[in-house]
Image (cartoon, rainbow, N blue to C red; front, side, top):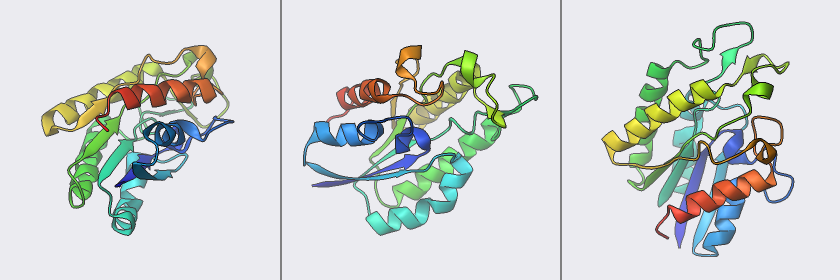
Length: 192
């Protein structure tokens, strides 16, 4: 039996899913009993936040496989500021990915990075929260993540463009149908 840890933000946690707990629970159902899943998705986390907790959680679970879905919150920009002024700039995001992967390699080389899904700009660029999302930034961060995975021989699963507006619960987080689409896309890219 494989021990699988999934690290990330609210998109890993499953925020917005009223039925099954996001793509992680759905993926576990699809793999059926061949694995033990540990969901370490925390809403609001950036790559910096993940680094602060990663070592302890890895040590506790000693995983065979690790999924990482991080970067959406890094790509946010502050309300009233330029979209280019992100919460965690691109250079530091990539630097953090390197540190994250080095920490994981102490336990396993089987590392799978999940890209960031597209959002609904008409909502996420105009909502009343302190930080906003835009697909332009998400695409930029996904491109850097994909390049990082290619350079380091990690699996990268691209989910940008998979969802339409009806698959989002609040403009940023998928709903049950959206998470099902993500789980299916991830499952078809795995070799379990």
